Structures are given as C-alpha cells and as structure tokens.
Image 1: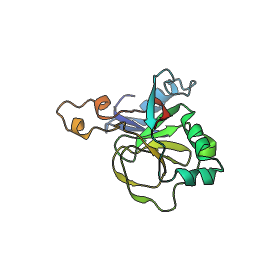
Image 2 (image 1 turned 180 degrees about the vertical axis):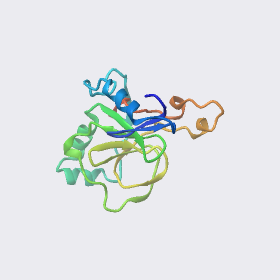
Image 3 (image 1 turned 90 degrees about the vertical axis):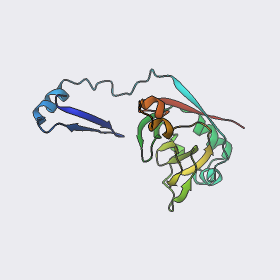
Amino acid sequence: PDGCVEFVGGYDSVLFLFEDKASTASLQDWLRHCDFSDGTMDAGREVQTIPVIYNGADLVDVARQAGLSVFKVIERHTAPVYTVRMMGFSPGFPYLDGLDPALHLPRKASPRDRIEPGSVAIGGPHAGIYSVASPGGWHLLGQTSVKLFSPDVAMSAAIRPEEVFLFSPGDRLRFQAVD
C-alpha cells in the first residue's frame, strides 16, 4: 500500500511499517481491493526433502505421550508435506504447518539450555528445525545435516536472503527418515 516501507509476515498476521505521512485510509482502501479468497500460500512450490536421522532425545517420550510406537511417530512425522508458515525465534528457524494432530504435544515444561543446529523437533501444532545452537523447549525427534542458516553469507557485502536462509514463508518440505 502507499507509504509502506516494509512488511513482515507472521504466523497469521502481517505487520506493515509505514512512512510517517502514510494514512490509515490508504491502507483500508488497499485492503478492500485485495483478493483473499484463495487463502493459501503458494502450493505450487517444489517440495524439498529433508533427511532426518530419528535419534532424538525425546523420541521415546513423544511416542509414550502420543500412545504410539516409535515407528508410528516417525511414520506420522514423515507423512505430511509441511508448509513454512513463518520464520522465527532464531535466524532461519521455520515454523511448519502440517504436523499430524496425534503428535500435537505441549512444549516441554522445562526447556533445554542448548539445542544443536539441525535438531528436528515438534512443539504444539508445529514442527520445526533448529537453525542455530540455542535454548529450546520443543520435543527433539531427530537430526538433519541440512544447513538452514548461513551467517557467513549474511555478513557479505551483497546479501540475498535466499542465499542466507534455506527456507522462506510458503516453502514446502517433507521429512525423510534415513540411517
């Protein structure tokens, strides 16, 4: 819309940042002319396959809480095509929609101090992949060697987001169990 200098997509919202002189009437007019009838993100994007070694510290506990075998947890985690709804809490961390409802578990009561990059996890209705070493309260299912964030590229003179981050909102992926 007129006067918009930046926008940031959230899980189910968009933050618009405007110049001081922008009017709310301009935004309202722009919104009235947007077509939201589809309501979906770009489903035509290629589905990326993310290899996962299912050896996570919480895998057995997730199976117990879900009332499933470890095999069934892995089967249900690898079955869906996930959509990146937003990037958040750390650089390159994708919040993924599509997790099987049987695996919807509350976050851990006590977060870990350090989760390694590449840790594949679930929390609430989401799946995610830790992109950098950080604290975290999600349930760890496994590990991937896929690099989600390239800080060295982020520090270069000519920054292109698609070279810094593996994913962006709307991207689609599927997990694949590997040995």
